[in-house]
Length: 313
Image (cartoon, rainbow, N blue to C red; front, side):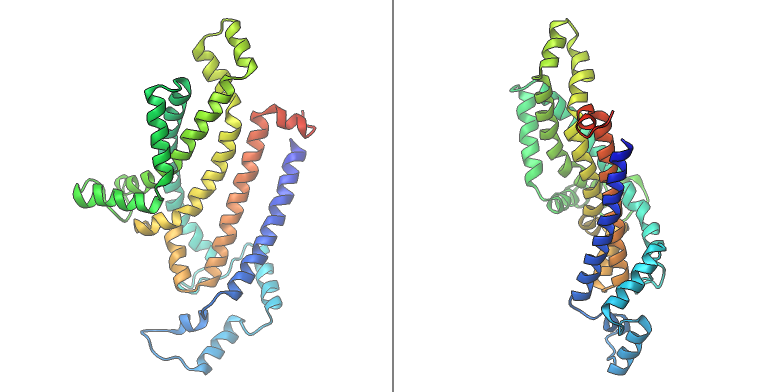
C-alpha cells in the first residue's frame, strides 16, 4: 500500500508540473491584452507609453522563459501571485471563496446520495418491476438534461412562479436548495444506472449463490456482501464526480449568482486576470489529482484483488 501511495504521489507532482507549463503557455497564447484591460477606466483612452510602463512594472517585457521561471519559483513557495482585479494575493482570494463552493459541493453530494442510492438499490433488488422501470426512466431523463437548463427550469418554477426558494445569492440554507438540486440531480442520474448495474453484477456472482445455499438471509447478503463487492466502480466514479462538482460549479454559480470560487473565476476570465486564472487552474488541478490519489487508495483498501495484483498484502 505504501509503494502504491508513493507512485501516486510521484504522478501527482509530475502532473502539477505539466499542468503549470501548459496553463502558463495557454495564457500567453490567449487573445486580449491584460495590461489594457487593467488600465481601462470608464473607457478613457490609454496611451502606448502608459501601456509600456505598466508592462515593465508587471515584468511582461521579459522573455517568456524568464517569466515562467520567476512564476515557477514563486509557485514552489506557494506564492500564486497577485490578482489584477483585487490587488490581493491569489491564494487569499481562493481561500476566501472556497468555503462557499465546498458547501455547495457538499449539499450537492447529499442530494446525489439521497436520490441515487435508494433508486439504484431498489432497481437492483426488484429488476423489471415498476420501481426499476421508473428509476431507469428518471435516470435517462436526468442524464439527458443539461445542468444549466435544469437550473433555469428550477428558477422558473420554484422562484419566479411559486416564490418558494430564492433564485440567487447566499447566506441561508434556502439559497443552497436550487443550486444543490441542479448539481445533485444531474449527477444522480448517472449513479442510479451505475449502482444498479454494479449491484446486479455482484448479485450474480458465485459467492452470492454460495451464501444463499448456506441459508444466509437476503438482507444480510445484499448489505454485507453484494454492496461491498459493488463498491469499487462506485467509489472510483465518486472520486471523479467530486472533482467534477468542484470544477463544474462554475456555470451553476454564475446562473444562481452564488458567490463561490466558480463565479469569481468567470469574472477573472472576463477581466483577463491571468494570475487568478492560472492560480485557479493549478489549485483545482491539485485538488482533483489529490482526490484521484485518495480514491485510488480507498479502492485498493476496499478491493483486495487490486492489492494482490500490485504485489500488496
